[in-house]
Image (cartoon, helix red, strand yellow):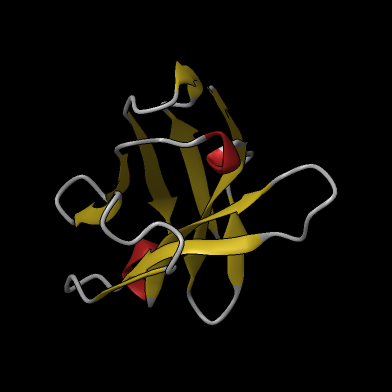
Length: 114
């Protein structure tokens, strides 16, 4: 079992930045990848970015150049630095941990106003 605790969401103006954090605990030795997904009202949950424990990353095309995922293995924490936020980034952001099974955080709201 893996437990995920997210923090860092909020409401900002377009062009501003936020950083999301997700701390993992439990069976963390089995982590294959960690990442962030988001879900806007009426939309399906979509991948934002993913990283392996050794730092191999993948970012969705819609956020490339604006968002950066990183991992601190010493703190068992994954971060999502979000710069130049746009109204279309408004969503609930979920931390994900994959060990062969998927684990999800509780979600954190990000709201970007124009």
